Length: 399
Image (cartoon, rainbow, N blue to C red; front, side, top):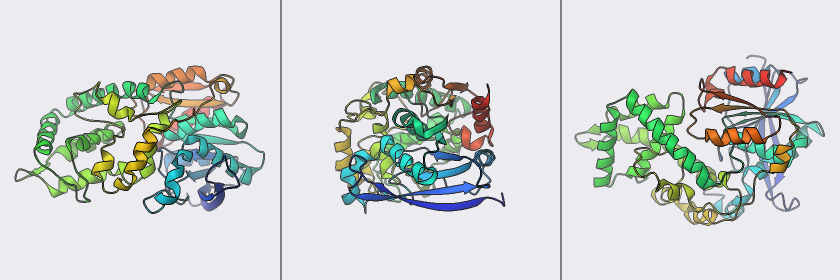
C-alpha cells in the first residue's frame, strides 16, 4: 500500500502504576495509517512477552483495519523497543516483574491514549493474549474504549490456571490424534525419537538439553493452520546413521525458540491465568492427570529453566513468581454491566484458548457478540486475508 505511513511514538511510563512518580520505563508504539482523519485502533498482540508485529503494510488484516482506522501497534512493556526485559536488564526489572501483566499493559495504554487523543476513546483489537488484555481493559478502564474486537483471546474470567489446563490438555490430545490420522507414519517416528532421547543426552546447537519432554513441546505447532504439516516435515527424516541429525536438531531449536527468546513469556505465561493466589506450576501439576501425551502444548514447566542456558539466569525468579499471590485481572461486576460494544471470534478447536471457558465469558460480558467458528484457527486473524476482522467489524456495526 504505497500510501501507508509509518510513525514512531515513544512514551515515558511508570514502572509501577502504583507509584506514578517513581522509576520510569520507555514505551514504544508504531502508528500505521493511510489517513489522519480516521479514528484510532490500538492493536494488542499475542504473548505475553512478544513485541507487536513488524508489518509491511500489505497484510490482509491490516489492510482491512486501515480502511477504517489509523492503527497503533504497541510493543507491550518489556518487549521490542519498549524497555525490554532480558538477561542484561534482569537485575533492574526482575524484582518488578509482577508489574508486567495485563493490568499494567492496560494502564500503559490509557496513558498513551490520553497522550495521543486526550479524552477521546479509541478502539482496541486484541489477538490471543491481546484479547486477555482487552477484557482487562473492559474491567479497569472501559471509559477509554469506543469498541473492542477480540480474536482467539476470550479468557475464562472465573477460571484459575488449574482449570484452564484441565480444559487444554485434552485439546492437545485431540490435536495429536488428528495429526496421526493425517500422517499415520509419524506415530512411530515420534516414539523412536522419544526412545532415543530417553537413552542418550542430546543438546541442541545452542546448548539447550533436548529431553523427551522438551521434544514434546513441538506439539505447540499443532495450534496453527499449517502446524501439522510443519511437524510432519520435521519428523520425516530425523536420523542420520542412527543418531539425530544436525539438520533435525537445528529445526527443533528453531521451533522451540518461543520458550527462550522472550523471557517474559516463560516467566508470566501461567500468571495470565491467575485470578486469586498462586499458580504453583499448574501446568506441571495438572499434567500428571494426563500422563500418556506424545506432545505438549502451550504450557511452561519448571525444567525449561534448568535445560535452557538462555533461561537459566531467570530460574530463581521463575520459582518466586510461581509462588506469588496474584490479584484478579477482571472485574466481574463491571463486565456484567458492560456498555462497550464488543465482538469476539471463538475458534472451535483452539489449542491455546479453552473454548468452553471463552463461551462462558461471552455469556457473562453484557452485550458481547460472540462468533463461534470452525472455519478458522487460532491464527485466523493473520491468515484469513482480512475475513475474520471484517466479520467482527460487520457484527459490531449491525443494528
